[in-house]
Amino acid sequence: MSEENIVPEEGKKSLNFIEAVVEKDLAEGMNDGRVQTRFPPEPNGYLHIGHAKAICLDFGIAREYGGVCNLRFDDTNPIKEDTEYVDAIMDDIQWLGYKWGNVYYASDYFQHLWDYATDLIKAGKAYIDEQTSEQIAQQKGTPTQAGVHSPFRDRPVEENLELFNKMNTGEIAEGQMVLRAKIDMANSNMHFRDPIIYRVIYTPHHRTGNTWKAYPMYDFAHGQSDYFEGVTHSLCTLEFEVHRPLYDWFIDELKHFRPEDGTYRPHQYEFNRLNLTYTVMSKRKLLQLVKENLVSGWDDPRMPTICGFRRRGYTPESIHKFIDRIGYTKCDGIIDHALLEHSIREDLNAKAKRVSAVLDPVKLVITNYPEGKTEMMEAVNNPEDESAGVHEIAFSRELYIEREDFMEDAPKKFFRMTPGREVRLKNAYIVKCTGVKKDEAGNISEIYAEYDPLTKSGMPESNRKVKGTLHWVSVAHCLTAEVRLYDRLFSVENPSEEKDLDFRNLLNPDSLKILTACKIEKELENAQPLENFQFQRIGYFNVDPDSKPEKLIFNRTVSLKDSWNKIKDKD
Image (cartoon, rainbow, N blue to C red):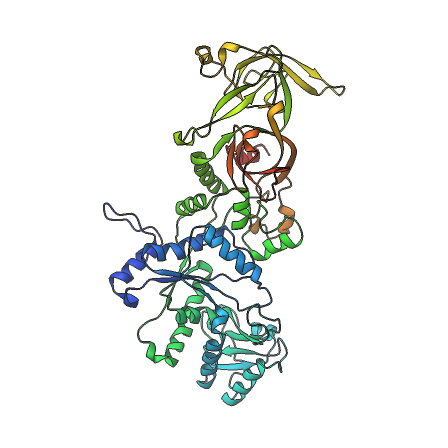
């Protein structure tokens, strides 16, 4: 089957290659017309954006074809697993808008897997190997050179059974012995060269405690778990493609011991994983960032975790749009982070409320505006959505504007505030700068201007053309807030390719800037955690969960425009 989208008949949507497989299977009556998928994360960390792509496919296929998708935790390695991760994974799936049919754990099948392994030993298709891991790796050979048989390969069945039982009673030390499937040491597929299927681990399991000492390997547990649950389409990323023949071998052998199960069997299909520029997707590296306090936690808004994107202000809809755009193929590549940012800009542009916020304030005094007077100006909540309505913002004699919006000696193409030039204050009046006040160090502390009372927004004179429009807040009517400016976590496009460098040395030193004296309009005083806004002329922001009424905190989700490539071009 081609990895590209299938060209549709007129009036039908295009299908990705997995949807085409499912439709073909349904048309042929495979698996009694059932569609059943599963999402099988290991609970050893928080999910990242790559997992979101798998979630959308696993749950989306089931939803599209009237099937069921189960959540199954692949908890076969107690050393790395924790219930904290189980809870976080469930939260992320629900936040993305999906519901699972059932919740399963690989540990639910430990007894079934043990019994199956025992059957393989009795059939002469598995044996206990007492070589070290280094010896086993060495005697497996290379892709071009056949491996050699273990000296324990022909161990008697009864001895194998006795030792296998001891692996689970605490009589065998970790690393002392393993159970290997007896397949083919000369097979061109290295995974067939007598793979390890059980090893000894003494770390208590997060669900089964100390009941088990011998634990199945992923390749042995995964396909069988699919089989036990009735999965029809087992969807994996491309790195598991070379594992598929072994997946099939174990299931076929299992069916040999379970002949009453008829013609049903699960099938594995692989799709390209999501690789994103300016970040890493390795759970090991992400955990390292967290443990070494290089980020504030798994939900740090710079992290590619789903909870990190949520805290930064990304919406489920924006992630769905992004994944729909990149699609599913069998060709690996790397996706530009700018496409993800485009998706959230597009989503928030349509629904985020527009408000005024000044990140680096300098005072603007309207010298001919009456002292003590306050006007309420009407501000449109969202020009893209008429139903969003309007709100009022206070205007007074003393305002704050952005320091970068003023230049005393401005070049010709600077269209913001400069002495002698008119600009419009958004939703208010046209003003002309008349002078400045400086402190002892020569820094501008106040800017002076005069307003034209006939140019209030909505009045006839308000149509007078000026080239610059500035946002502002009233000094007497604004709130102070902390604003966190987040940027890309790494300073290089593909940190995973920099093999000769420690990935931690590639972190972007400007990935977070914290501004503590920002001024925001009073409309935001009741803003709720994770609520999205557009700070006019600046970007999209949301309320951080740490925000409190007495200390408002906003995270930059994304700027209004992508300035990253322009910055790179200057370097």
